[in-house]
Length: 77
Image (cartoon, rainbow, N blue to C red; front, side):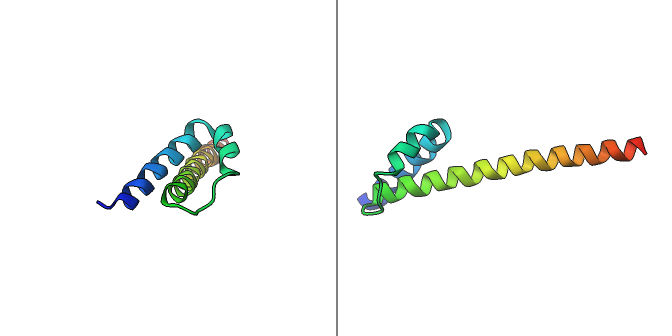
């Protein structure tokens, strides 16, 4: 695998983990990142993926709550 691809992957994985486990630190770091190299682009894209997955998880939880509430209302009628 090319060195650039490995650098991108390393940045992606680190950005993903940083966004999930230390969002405050990621927010501070993000301000200094640009997409001028493969590592920084990887960090930004990995963090974006982590955020998408977090949002999907939240939506799933909300859907479950909504479904439970609807079932409870049906039972009460």
